[in-house]
Image (cartoon, rainbow, N blue to C red; front, side, top):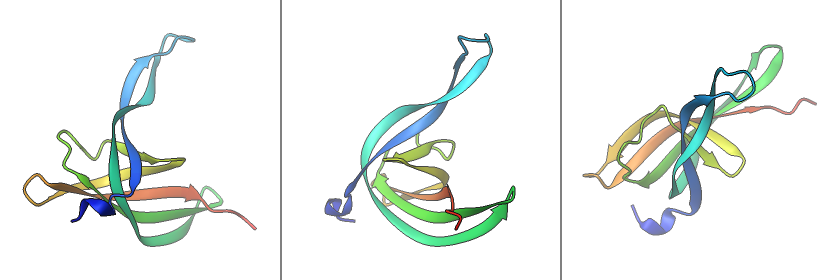
Length: 110
């Protein structure tokens, strides 16, 4: 893979638990882990009905340089777009990560 194909700047985030200041409970937020360059390719898409609204799901492949500690429990932020990581694979000997992700968006109703 040529590094010149890494044309998108994305943020990798992980879930962190913290104290809720208002009610004293535990709240969950997403905190940034790293900002990396990536190549993003849309692979497939489908629409389905859930909770009486049309939902759209796209399968996305993301390639980034090797990042130690990357897991499927993390997510990616590409601008306003959130990508949930489904699988993490390594290509080459600690050279690249290939991430299979899902992009869930509510489809516009007409």
